[in-house]
Image 1 (cartoon, one colour):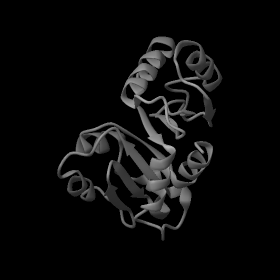
Image 2 (cartoon, rainbow, N blue to C red):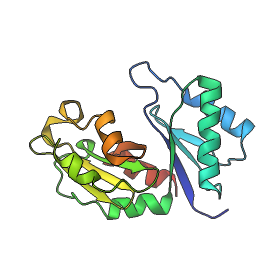
Image 3 (tube, one colour):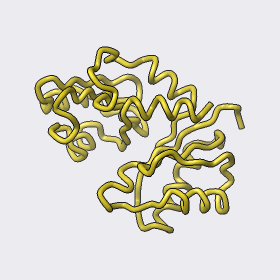
Length: 180
């Protein structure tokens, strides 16, 4: 185990009454049924903070299976260490974005498929921008916001060829602070 802490990010939980995963109950289950230590959560949208478990892939699979078994929700679990969160923030390709809440980082399980950016660029609305930095897809939704974008879950999944979960930059900054 290293001194680095990490964030385990759940995709699309507790949105509009769907995919309900109560964070307090999840924390309790993680403490009782896994070897994770230093477990806490941040906001209801599925951000688990914990000490680096060492084998990230095994941990993500274990947490995904636990959530599916206990809550009936099959959600990807994508990990980023404190160092990886800081690196993502430092590599922000859109530091001139108008609003942090409209600038998102989609953390991918692994690198995106070849041609993903080209496929997604065809769907951009006026003012939107995207950039792939390692295994992180940056999306600047601009003034129109997430809800008017054509970059839907289905479009992103098909083009990227890999699962991911997005957080706005404000949340990513907070996650970086919480994983110190």
